[in-house]
Length: 276
Image (cartoon, rainbow, N blue to C red; front, top):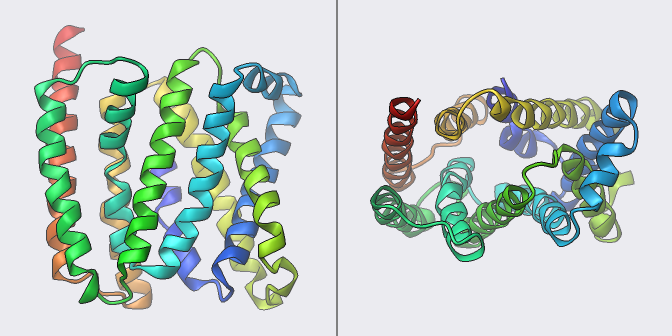
């Protein structure tokens, strides 16, 4: 359910008639504010204090989540939806690299083979940006930044896994909204767009909560397989609603990335089930 709620995220950005930073401001303010209110009502201030006590790890998590939220909207405004979601699908590769560097976790053959397949896939997507509808290399690079920043946030969260980082999402979103407020024009948002903006915030709120709760009950491999659904469904949704053709290079590169991650997660899932 968390993945299904996040599928229309890029479509909302495409449909809302406002500049990218204004969309990002309202997206982050609504999702962060509603998340904070939900946590305060259900658990009080304790969860927020717990995240703040993690020190630099909590700070890295909040910065990564908040910054990636801003860059995501900018990326969708500059390149195609398909390019964005296929590039962001590379997040597990960055997460593996950061875990190796900062957590000293070893690389296995599965990880190396996944990286060897994902990198060419991303290269094909970038190569085709000049021909793909609504695509650009600048937007592709921002999407890559989203992947790297969110992977850094997840790596920091793993270092303090005993603490729920759901309040960190709310604080990260609100801080990012505060930072970009002087550069956006939130009061210029047309009133006829208010329903779309509110729906956008509610969808992000639902996905954030459900994606934070889900991994408590299933394995990381199962999470990885389910998250791939967004990469498949989001471009199809944009294609159906706004007629945005992903283009042959994006479809080819995206297929390589998705297949590589699919096989990698299936191998991991089989290993986990055999060890039980």
